[in-house]
View (cartoon, rainbow, N blue to C red):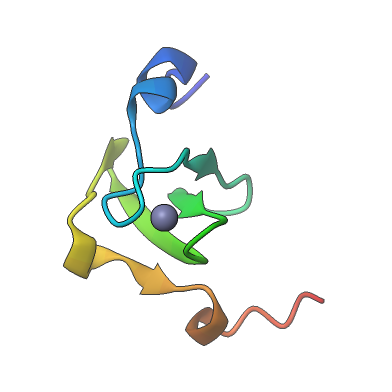
Length: 63
Ligand SMILES: [Zn+2]
């Protein structure tokens, strides 16, 4: 158990206020609606709007 699921349930996207998803491969939270990701810093999410990174620009050629 790393990030508490109750804590995750309280968190919302700083841009659209939608639910965030915990990413498995990386320590970050993802908003599927905005297609942006926020890094976790030592388990603490850095949910400033300007801290989000675009998933498209992340360079994951996964699909
Ligand atoms: Zn969002």
